[in-house]
Amino acid sequence: MKTLKNVLVISALFFSFFSCSLEDESFFQVKYTIEDLVKIDAGDSKSWSIQGYYSNYNQGVMKEDSPCYADDIFTFQKGSTEITVIPGEVSCYMGDSKEEITTASYEFYEEEGLVFLSISKAVQVNGVTKNTFFSLQLVELSNDHMIFASGEKGNYEVAIVLRASNN
Image 1 (tube, helix red, strand yellow):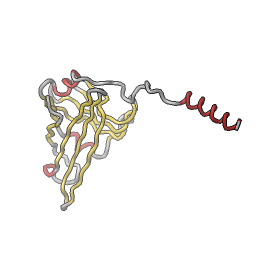
Image 2 (image 1 turned 30 degrees about the horizontal axis):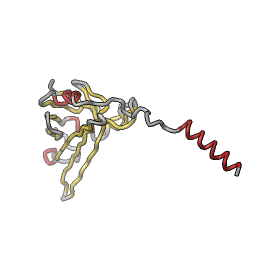
Image 3 (image 1 turned 30 degrees about the vertical axis):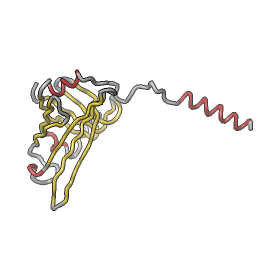
Image 4 (image 1 turned 90 degrees about the horizontal axis):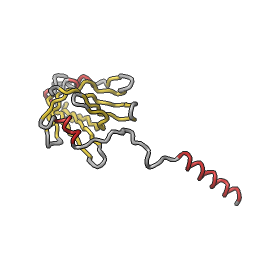
């Protein structure tokens, strides 16, 4: 019985020293506001081009399909979470880029201050629909630069970097 009590006391001490606090900082410390969203749509409409699509942002490793995203233009409109996408010339699926459909949207969670970008690319090849979908969190925002990424602050893994096409 005494051994069991000692194990419980040691376990409780261990957990109290090494457990996470509810007040720990989140992975991405920036909380965005409605006012910040003006940087995304310029209060009306703003176009962005993809500077890079990374499998590991910190190491500068681009995803294999980065070129098929890099020539797309994304236009954010005030009052809409749907993003107008003008596809580029490079296809992600070894076919005619005009057969490819790209959709994008973003979600703003005001209470948490989080913004997520979702992108989907689809094409029908030989009667089979191929689809790629991903969603990333906004981690950096300025008037001419946005980064949506996964991973911890300062250690981004998958990331998409956008540059403003017009200001």
